[in-house]
Structure formats: C-alpha cells, structure tokens
Length: 240
Image 1 (cartoon, rainbow, N blue to C red):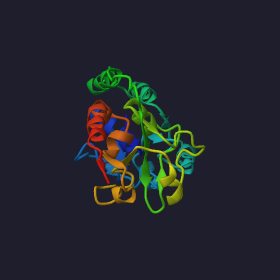
Image 2: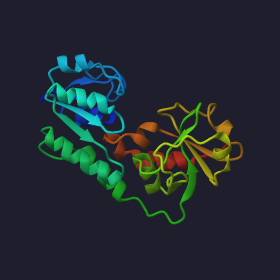
Image 3: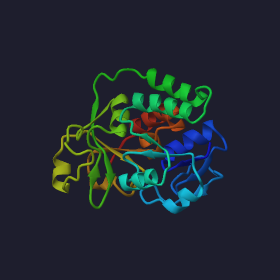
C-alpha cells in the first residue's frame, strides 16, 4: 500500500508500524528522524499536485489538522482518504488501532499496547489543578473545550479553565486572560514555541509548566511515554 500522511502524528504511527509504506509526508513530519518519503508541503497547505503524483492508495488526514477544501479536492481526484478526529485519549488509542488494521497491520504494534497500559494505569486525580493553556501568542489563543489536548490534561489531573468555552480555541483579551481563576499556566512548545524566556513573564506570580507539545497534542507512538513525561513536566512548574 502506498500511503501519504498529512498528519505528523499519524506519520510517526505508520512509520513505526508499517516500515516502507509511506511515500509522502508533510514538511512538519519530524518523527521518526531521517524518514525516507517525499515531502508534499505543509499540513494546512499541501501541494496537491505532488500528492497526486505519488499515486497514493490512501491519504491520511485529520479534521482539525487539515483543510476541508484540500480533502474535497483529493476526493474529487479519486483519492481515498482515511479521516481521523479523536478528542479523547481513549478515542485516539482505539482509532489508531482501527487505522493501522485498515492499512495492513496484522497485529497491534507493541507501542500501542504499551500506550494503552500507560494511560489505563494512571491514578484518578482527587483535586485537579485549574490551568490556562495558551497555544499561541500575539494574539493569545488558548485551548478550549472538546479537544484532545484538553482530555490529555484532564487525565493527568489538570482542568482547563476554558473547557466550557463555546469555541474550541478561544481568543481572550489579555485582561480576560488574567482575570481567569487559575493556579497554573501550561505552555506547550507547539504550535507556538513557548520557552522559559517567552511566555511565563506574561503571567507574573502564576506557576508555569513548559510541556512537550508533541506529547500533549500528537496521537501516535508518543502516547506511550506521554503520561510519565507530561506528569514530570507538570510537577516542575515554576513561578513566572
């Protein structure tokens, strides 16, 4: 099967499970390193002519990651799509299993079995922390409700204070952002690359946790190590 992936986390999942099946990936597909596949542009603006030239049997897309008009154009060209849209950890684990089977895997890969066990073994949080979770700056964009990353944090004992927002990615004003009652600020390193020097200073007096964006937002092999890594990074929150 010739597979083109327009979703970095799915690229990693397929590469780890079906070596050699990927013929095209995006410029943002960074894992695994040294991937031998043609680059077809970005997730949001792929070069569709390049995708079609690879003669894929299937193209992997995500409702949130990719644009609907690109998906429609590929369908119109006769390309089969495998569409994903998990919004919880459990949905992601099950969807990965179904996708890999559909793509030709004969058994569940070891990394997926390990990921299921890692998330199933988490203790139930007793008193969740309340957090603001910015994902972009200038302007501020924060994690809202019904998101995969929000569910990841909830499973780790962190409640997103914007979890009840009508928008999945609200754009609060700085005044509104600072008026929110939160005892923690979670700053992932993607899509915006928050660092110790860029982000915490905007929230004086609040503990800030710098998290791996790949482990917070990707659904693939990174899920196996995400609970331990993200828990450790949350525990290392420092005052701004």
